[in-house]
Amino acid sequence: MTKTKLSQPAPDVRRARIAVAVLFLTNGALFANVVPRYPGIKDALSLDNAAYGLGIAAFPAGAILAGLAAATIIRRLGSARAAVFGTILTAIGTVLVGFSPSFPLFAAALFFAGAMDSITDVGQNTHGLRVQRRFGRSIINSFHAVWSVGAVLGGGMAAGAIALGLPPAVHLSISGTLFAVVSVVALRYCLPGKDEDAGLTANPVGTETTSTLRSALSPRLIIMVAALVVIAIAGTLVEDAGSTWAAVYLGNNLGAPAAIAATGFIALVGAQFIGRLLGDGLVDRFGQRAVARAGGLITAVGMGTALLFPTIPGTIAGFAAAGFGVATLVPAAMQQADELPGLRAGTGVTVVSWLMRLGFLVSPPLVGLIADNSSLRFGLLVVPIAGLLAFALAGVLTNTRKSSGTA
Image (cartoon, rainbow, N blue to C red; front, side, top):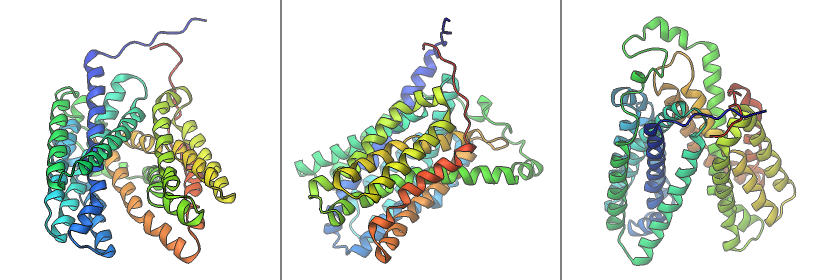
């Protein structure tokens, strides 16, 4: 039986794919340049732990406050321009972090950067999904994989700047300028026009009436959005558990040396990167629903076993399994939200992204509260629980798959 050869995307679509990947890379790299600077800024501003934690929380707080404006900005500018607009302003925010001479200005700079980052996030995901529709197969997971590459790149740049003794103001000015310019160049190769001009929604600009909104906000749509938000939160919660608690659990609870304790999060993000590289092919072959269910099961079984039988190697493997399992959850939720019927361009992605950030803000203190009242091992049960929730709710995802063939 011969296989049907899939048609190649047009050159402009292939260029747009590269451009969107570049936007994801700049987004990952910008903030990753800031994070390694936190300890030095904390010391320079003489902040205690409470003030430092409050300042760091300004970033997600800004994202939550501004996140719902993303859909309106996308409809006015188009998703690509909105993403680049947000990238430039996020870059300015990171530069201001480096120049902040006091705690209020430090927190204000992070608040501004977080607010602008939320616009970039929705814009680049919306445009990436627009390119995916033109591409004819799943590519959204590859964009999120490139984001991980950008985060590694940004962290490496920051480590190099610290080793060279560059002040935060100089280092962050260089990184902010560099990635803002890169994003502007990438815009040239994105798909032209606004998203609604491309026929991506059921309701053109200006034709959405009160009755349409009323019919759109049906109980079924609300349930769908709630399920997608939980799926997205499951992905971010696992990632946050790794970044916030993996080293603490391995070091303090299991007695791992500091160098070994750090590998818990490395294993998680490394496996997540691999999962995203493989994710598009798996989605095309098996469908979003099947991949999410399998991933949820891998997360629940892998981390659940590690917590049930606590050892250092087993726990590192458990974090790796969790990272691999949730790799496609956020992209899947974004894609499904973008395709919800009756909503204008960017609305579904905006709502899911915004509510997802609420979960990201709440999860660290939740795990900490459980750990303080019981144990961190018990608190980390949120990871297998997140996997079970993704498994249970994956039915809201489409399970269409591409026919076999050669690209």
